[in-house]
Image 1 (cartoon, rainbow, N blue to C red):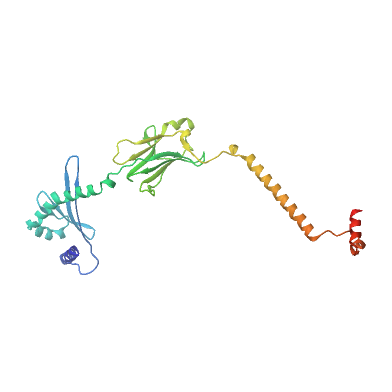
Image 2 (cartoon, one colour):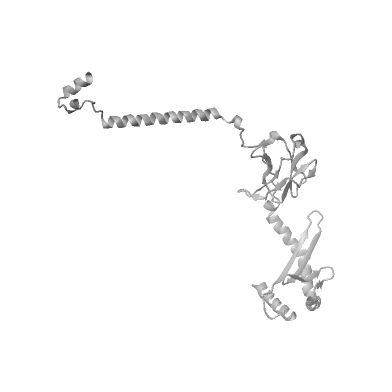
Length: 277
């Protein structure tokens, strides 16, 4: 809330300086520092923007302000005379900002410095499909992967996939190589390279047919005999079921003798004798 009121006042002042009476306006401040933990070098910056354009930038060496546009000169001259204000920026940029940077780096060390290498596989749907070089399980997501021929990166016949998240917080990605114009004798000249940001050594995977994983099965290797046998067995079982139903229905309805006189007889013994004859 404190900065909200300050920035609101700043916008009102700038509107007066620029003769603006209405409309939506944006006032921005950006400050920060870069620290090299190996050399100890610190680079700092503070700058202000108005309506999407640079307005003022602080020169730490001279403790003065740089005005990239004429409309900012009035503010520059006023701020250059405010030595306590500029000394405050000097102390913040030289001491407070690097201190905060080191503290936040220490807080997030477990995630910021986390490095995990992927498992890389060659995948292919069918013999005529592109070969996909797939890497999964790497961290952080700042990584790149590409195909090479004779050590030179390829740009033709190559399709790059997006970096996607895994459920465990790691990432995966893939890059496809079209094999339609590559003869088998030249496969050994190709390899897939995975590079993880901040890591010196790359993971290189040679294009080797024996290393390609696929679920595709050749029609000649498909177990057709088992399938045909299963179909024949199913048809036989269906025929037996139909025959059983037919016999059951005949029994349920009963058999009637062909001779009408026999069927009209009330003597059970005559029916039995007729059946015996």
